[in-house]
Image (cartoon, rainbow, N blue to C red; front, side, top):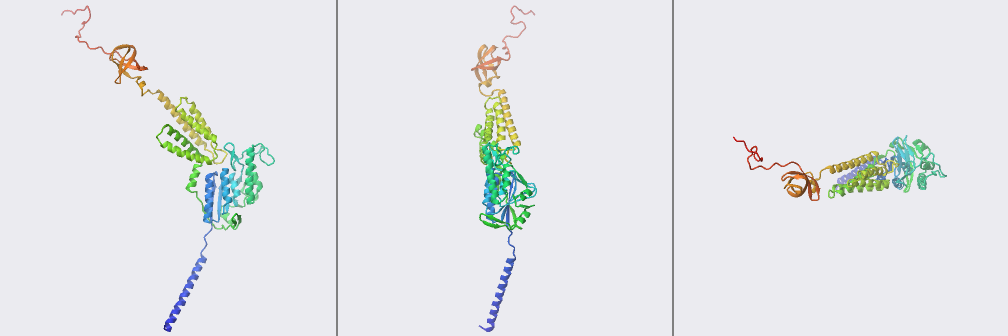
Length: 490
């Protein structure tokens, strides 16, 4: 190869190497200058009464945060309380979460009352917005004896009740003392786990004590007071937390907040487990099945009633139900239905209406926040059932006053024609049929009679009018036919 060609190839190789090195340096500069994606923080909300739908929503949200690798979860709380079982399920999910959960009572004016206090104590970080409150965690009994609601309104008068050495009401039943002591131990356990104020935890249960946000911060019940979520993220940035999976340092400054919207399943569950909806489904189911039972073959009421009743039974399974109320509702509907077929002159219907109203009032425990049937709905159902009962009574009385249109008794009031002259027993023709008849007055052949009663298979008749005399074959002249009369001579 000539010397000049060899030099040209060598120069081209050096140029290619320089260009490649420059390209790599440029690419490295671009990659190093690119900003890393901002950490994600998922936002879950607890608003209103805490029930099974809330549990499902929180569990799914925490699972989504773990799958997405979120830095933390903000649990924004504004609740008057809820059910004990749902609250404990939520707390178990929070305690086992590999993602830090920041409890935040917000917006301003919100509260974490009763069950909300338990949840706030269970979170890894507790914060409140200004002008918010928490506490009043005394449990109440549900369903006539079983204590099913944690963090509800106080179960006793509180101020005037004598207390024993533990601070619980001395006059309460053994079950009430057992439930209160269990709740105290549960909330104190959460306080010890998160290193928060133990005295308030016990006072919130035994005395229904409450705190404002500033008081809660001062007593060590919460760690932060934040105006909004951005302020909260800025304050918790760099905070070190100890989780079961290991230590975590929060890097939340400028984090992207992603709200978690309830999916269709959770919205359906929340709708079905609403006490008003569950009560309405129960009524529709019972009425639908009863209507189908008395009108077999219609199918639509039976299908709709069966579906509604199954949905209602599912809702009643997870709601604080008083089964005496359910029994009274079923009894009331049964009595109203029986009124349609038994001649009780309204006694069964009125008793059924009273049982329906009292059963509806007793169906759910009104002390559990957000889990009572609206009074307007109970009144509407009572009015509708009462109007239906009155309509049935009106139709029954109207039917009794109507003339009989089937059977032999429909002949009463009809007209017949006498087949021969009779006084007593004879025969008449009615609607093309010959019947034996009886009359207390003389009846001429062809005379119209009216049927006034039935005596077995004998018609009791009454003549209507006298028959016209038969035409004479003699000439009609004056005086003809009168004895002893002779015509005058012309």
